[in-house]
Length: 309
Image 1: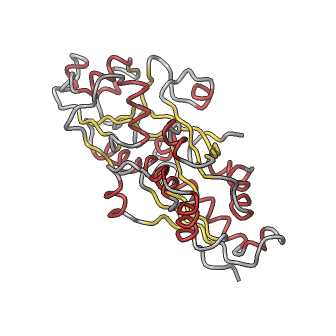
Image 2: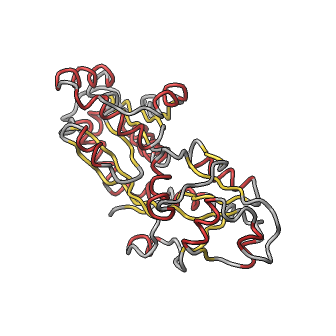
Image 3: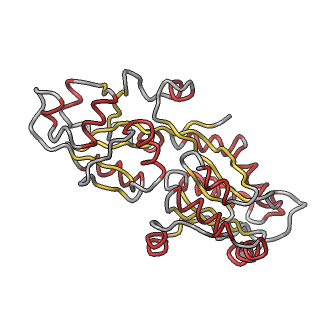
């Protein structure tokens, strides 16, 4: 009989909200304290903890669930591994929370949906990165938004105008559109998705203060589905999962397709990474092999993202 599935997304709202605005000084801890903390948090070598990006969390959870249902114990996957239950836990709290948890030694892998910052790399002892897939941020609107009938493309300048509040109503964007407020939906402005959007589109301009900040990419897309006058930067993968419920617009004449994302012509894109410290344990390496292997990459693609192989 297969063991009960232990892969689960943990709701840690209180802990994550307390940590969201904090910066870590754990990089100054001694190696002994860091190792001790990691050992306490991970319990045993057969337990693997993932923390971070809400975009990547469902992908890792899906792969972990299938892996656990197929094998149950580590030795069933590889006879050289111990006869212990596979226990893989996934918690979502944003890319910054993922790197912070690795720095603090409270997770084995941080899930990061952006490039890892230089200061994070410096703070993580013997930092290791594993590229799981590629995502992009699509400029998505509700199918009932009248803008879809008059244009399918936004320039960088128009996007900045919409998100900064320069265009207060859709009529300000195009005179034939209704004088309805532009409802801007973003992720947490301290999160990885917003950092990518700010860097690639907004530059020195800030998103307007009354933009609605969604707690996850799924919530962001749902907000667009619920409001005909909303616009937001929806993850390529999550937008694909909600095809027909949201309409992605071209950016500077370029459609968000796998081909255009891979060749770099679609400019709002980001890597999906796992970040760890030092060499992985035998069990960690076994699961990494699954994530980066054919089955894991198939799941990445099935969930709407671009696999790395």
